[in-house]
Image 1 (tube, rainbow, N blue to C red):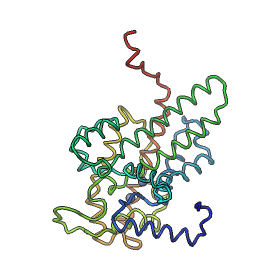
Image 2 (image 1 turned 90 degrees about the vertical axis):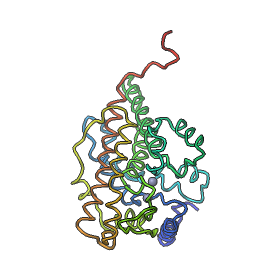
Image 3 (image 1 turned 90 degrees about the horizontal axis):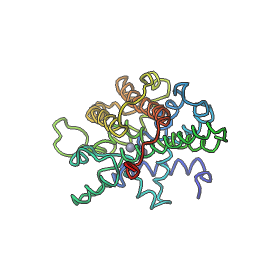
Image 4 (image 1 turned 30 degrees about the horizontal axis):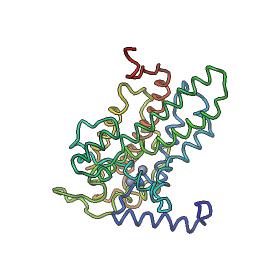
Length: 311
Ligand SMILES: [Zn+2]
Ligand SMILES: [Zn+2]
């Protein structure tokens, strides 16, 4: 059955079941920010791109598509597509406490996988967030480079414009996940290990914070107010993205503290609403800056491949 054949009622039931699966703790919750939060992040990033980015990517139709794509990789978590679900579930998170055993993290996915397997560990338990994000960002940059070539040659750019819009929206999902503190930690759904602050060990916090609380209380205007001014990201993108994840990770304790104070029940508190809007704004700002930087970097000459050097 396709999703469009689902009645609103059965669709709600599906969502409720999905939530129940997350609460059960396994399979691992991967619906960061729920659909509402992902849409807000993608919509705000696309609608605040600077005017030096081509107009097609800032058009109302492109913003609509990029917004729609915010939750797209969560749609791939369906048991109707079991192989896809299994392959991409680890791309939504990274447990930095576990990943840092392999620090400095290799930038190439298979180099990391080789190190993890050599240590007899399971990469699906550690997560593949930064590799997936960096690879999708590189797809976006590649398509933008092709757009520049086609434009310079006076050819039709409509097909590559469609690809760029898709990559930008797809990228947005992972950058959004990367602004959810509970997607960067072994403490992703109930505290494990020494617990001096008495944080919850139940399996409600993840879904309650990112889905129930966000969809009931957080709206685009309050998030947009917390966005940073646009900037080009300097240096290596993998390194910049790791710094972004590490910053997100510093808020893990605060999520638990706010939850303990009832901050994610009902309408929450001014503090919990502000905290959540700021985390979403951090994601939207990073996504906008990554799209902008892909555009700038797509003008750079392609490096000479190693095998051609010295010939
Ligand atoms: Zn999540
Ligand atoms: Zn996700």
